[in-house]
Image 1 (tube, rainbow, N blue to C red):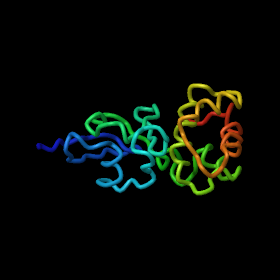
Image 2 (cartoon, rainbow, N blue to C red; image 1 turned 60 degrees about the vertical axis):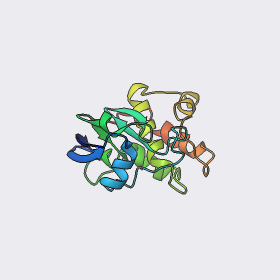
Image 3 (cartoon, one colour; image 1 turned 90 degrees about the vertical axis):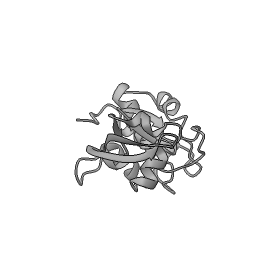
Image 4 (tube, helix red, strand yellow; image 1 turned 180 degrees about the vertical axis):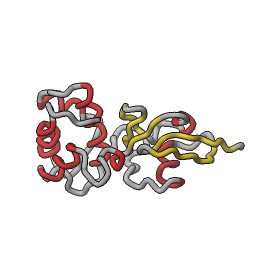
Length: 158
């Protein structure tokens, strides 16, 4: 099988990898580039743990074949902040104690970030629906929803 060379922007930095076409974006990010904040949960696209933003849209990186990332912009939770400053959602998750074990939190924050970009002042029910595809076994979601709601209505990007 022939390897492909795939170039994409990862957290604002151009990256290039050589990989077989059948590998997932999750595998390339973690195994080839050492992007360990992207976690593997279910491997079936139902838990949200491996969520990244692909051109600003949340996707399950375990379901995206690596070649689909060619020429695109990928953002992980590390790419949200501004230098050493945390993104407002990251700050809110800390302030509200929304990250217990932390395993689901990168995907949860990325999903919330994309959602707030499109829905800047959502209700708690709308927030709950938006994160429904991100499973958390530790928090019961209340603190997560509190954190997201505390950022709602504030400008969160650019």
